Amino acid sequence: MGCCASSDMAAAAKALGAARQIGASCTRVALYLEAWVAWVEEGDLVGAAKAFAEVVRAFPRDLFALKRAQLLYFLAGDAEAMLSVRDHKCCLTGHNRFRQRH
Image (tube, rainbow, N blue to C red):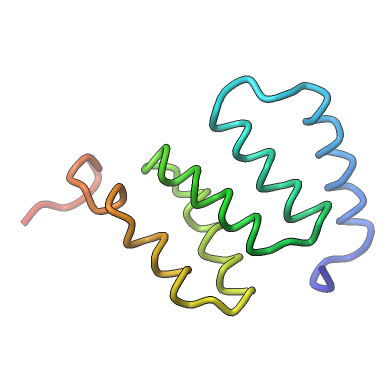
């Protein structure tokens, strides 16, 4: 957690507390909340990355979660896990309407 100013982390913790009070309205929100708690409150990069990777498995078009999972695995020094998020079968399907077809 040394990469962020303490005021940034305090603001993030405050926002996380407010989000917790609102509660998870759906699976995606619950997984995001789990990821942010792991990252912000617990400093658990791998736990947060796993939660973001679960978002990607459930919602393959969620590029924000994909990039967060990759970033956190990178910061944790786990290149294999970082690449496995991208290589998960749900990300390789033809369901992405933006994917160029050859």
